Image (cartoon, rainbow, N blue to C red):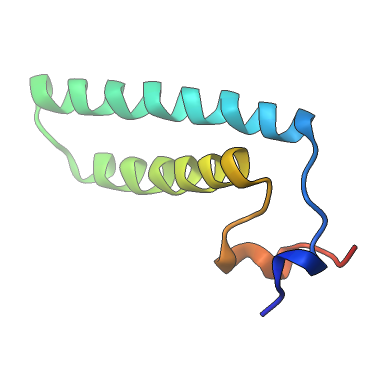
Length: 79
């Protein structure tokens, strides 16, 4: 597993972009739960929540730390 000192930290633009993605993920999750409360939960909603939740987690970690989560570090090249 690579350590953070071997991976280039992402710049301000990408962190800002991850902030927008995080915001829209929160809006999407609120919308899914609001729809599910009124119309009942369907099987597809659990898949939507899982995918959006994963996207939310990745973008939030990148926004706050500047590095990808540990399970995605294989996607980053070395410095």
